[in-house]
Length: 130
Image 1 (tube, rainbow, N blue to C red):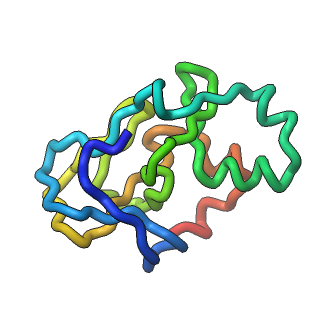
Image 2 (cartoon, rainbow, N blue to C red):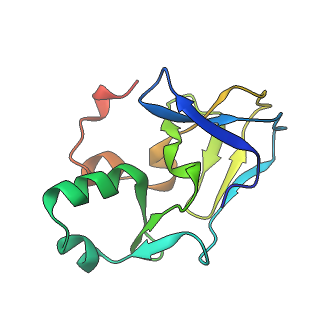
């Protein structure tokens, strides 16, 4: 669940992005896994999805290796974009601001920080990402 005020809008990185609606100080927790809101899905559940549904689902979910489940954030956190120079450090349980982030700046994370095999699981060539 997001812990800071954010909004979504068109991103120069990719499609829609997640943007700070307020100043976020370095070290601030920006998101926290909350089982009451964030949904967990088994591999078996994915196997029952159509290929289109699975592709759409994997755009917004991440695989938590400790739970052995895919997690789908219920809020706009699912719109955070990937960066090799992120301003957020992501783990499956918690996201923390690496630097001060001003209102209006896009929040970014390195997908591989919380799901080391993110690109492989989605059959996406990593070099296609900035």
